[in-house]
Image (cartoon, rainbow, N blue to C red; front, side):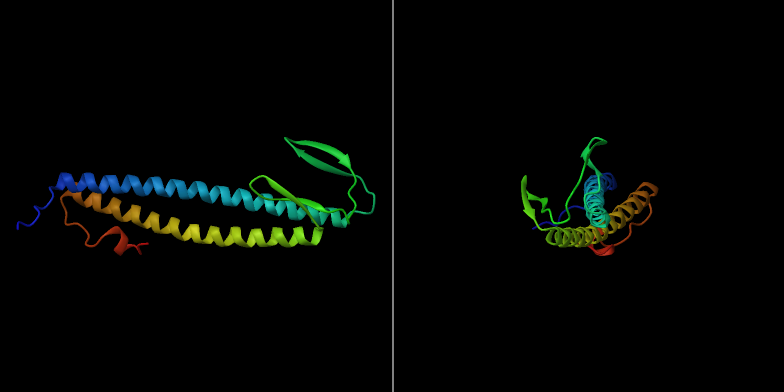
Length: 157
């Protein structure tokens, strides 16, 4: 049984470049997810602020109700009026204001937890990319390569 022949420096460099490209693609996807989470958090915060604003207004006081696209309609909202809230898959339910406030707070908490987890993954991939870049630089200069793998040297999955 013969042992595998060691890869040439060019083959190693190609393998490392392919892995670096894969890591960069994964990192870009994670950064897009991060942006979506931040956008969702802002939307939920705006909904909370709007509900708080309605609560602070006087009875039968006219407010501007946003329709989207910087379009508004004047109207009044009674504090006891149930609120419509989306629950996913295009389904909207009518709930008491207190339950909607609680639901929004829970969603923001889950968004924050997902954001923290994603930020940890982003840091890991940034470390992997940096480690692989250093390996490729060493290969290009003909220097000894750092030992280990990106997964073991930077924390892995």
